[in-house]
Length: 116
Image (cartoon, rainbow, N blue to C red; front, side, top):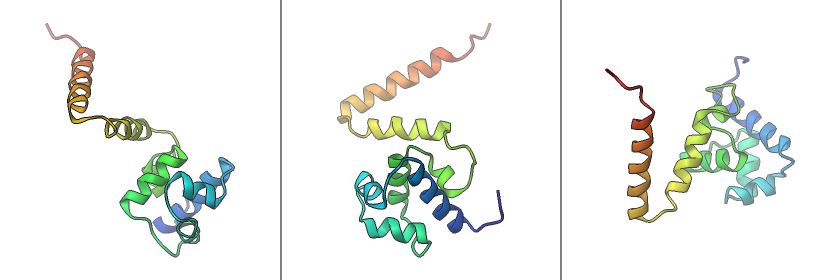
């Protein structure tokens, strides 16, 4: 990666990801529940997104926040899968969230190698 500032990397990657998905700035704004002017400012580098807006953009573009921020060059990562899992978890009732956490813990335990 070049020696660009984090803000420049974010602006460039945001624009590239949007264009690769054939989205206009207005399309991405609608997908991420933001104003089109916010997307324009982010791509121009005149504004930086909040944590919530960064997460919304990553979700809408189906990439990890680490990729948008230049922390990794891999577009798809475990983080993207994890983000999707937790995004869906937040839509559940409190009781169902507890059930899902217990099930995930059970699966993680089941996957551990057995010790003798």
